[in-house]
Image (cartoon, rainbow, N blue to C red; front, side, top):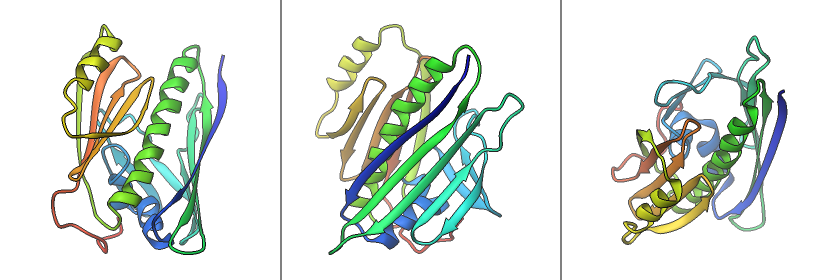
Length: 214
């Protein structure tokens, strides 16, 4: 079996169109809310994350500051993932941000992969909203780690919640938990193969836009 998929997210954010464009269409911007470290070179979006399982994406649309899209080339089995960002200004300083994630998942285990992708994308969209709202114009430093497979996820989430301290929960679903402090975004995700993935973005230095737009 296989599955075509599409998910849509939309939010009104208290940020300028230019700030949102920096967040979605530059390497430092994407790094500040997605996973790992991203750079954009010669029309290719490259994200270094763990074992490198995220395929490179080719930029298909770049219409600053309104529309940006990129996607992986279809594999031999037809697998591909595409992302589209739409940005529109509103009266005042608010901006409407829409994100569409789509693609094709082949194979018998598509359901588990789709669930992990769907829930993970929801976390990353929430992270994008937090970034442009709470840390606009700043450049984050990614911190990523992979733990061993978790045998009891309810217990793992309960133990994690018991150590939250002063952090504020900005998002959670069945597979993810996102916390925010004045220092950054702290994300915990249930990996596709059952491991706890730590994917934080810290804003402790002085790095701000403009930076090299890689």
